[in-house]
Length: 175
Image (cartoon, rainbow, N blue to C red; front, side, top):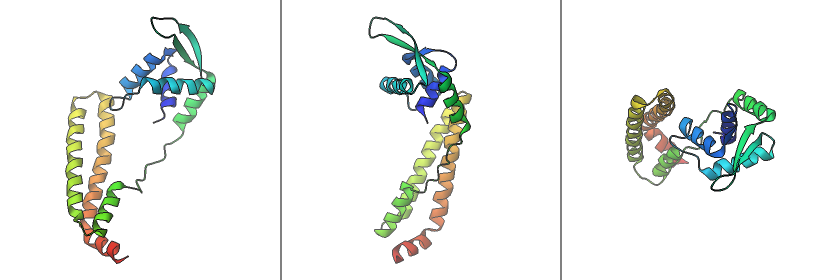
């Protein structure tokens, strides 16, 4: 996720302080990984440097001055371009799990145990996500569906690999 673009998009509804941006980000996108304040302010500093935001006002408070940021026309254009650009699909061609299976075969360990352990971990994660989805709002349901679909694809791969393990062992050990 592009934090800079997300913060810019949040600014389109009107100027905000860094604290307000962090809170809005965490509410909409950061349930599982909230932003750190330092991350917000370093990102805003970079966006300011690139002319994508401007300081709309400064307020004195009990602590440091509070800057209120506003998106510029260049920032709006940048967000529009980012939204219109498709994300590169993740192909998972460097899978750690695949590496573990092949190394187990190369070192004459039981790759079936690795696959079974991973299957159990995937199913545990799926139960947690399904429970979260059942209790969550629409945004939570959608993000959980996304994660569940990826876990289901992983489970299909685990089953396929288990079915082909003898053939894979023969190819890996022969090389």
